[in-house]
Length: 132
Image (cartoon, rainbow, N blue to C red; front, top):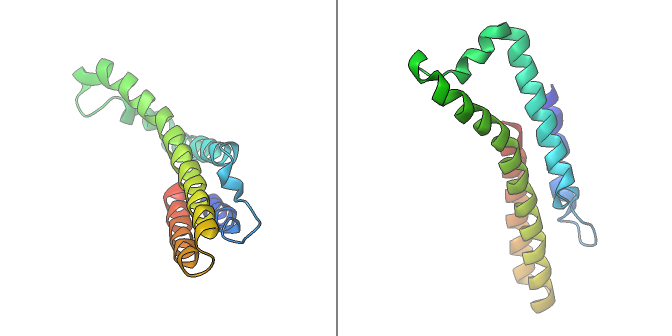
């Protein structure tokens, strides 16, 4: 339920930027960052609730002797994922709007429509990536 809500929220936030005169809320770094951190907290808490302490076993790695090496790597990996996904979403939405604005200034009609279509496809793809 929560992931579907995130998908719809991010999709609508991305698609608002396609409408001339409006800016995407996801063009501001705080919006995707907060959404990703809520997502991160939810799936870790759900994992703890379902698996209990056994959920933390995936931080140990495949071989018990590698646990001292794998624990810091897994923790850094889990903390870096929301950061990288929020930066990716922010950068894609920012770049899509900037490209559309540049081509609207250069060529009045045909070319910007193609970039707006590309922006719609990227918006849907980014909403999907953000929720999975």
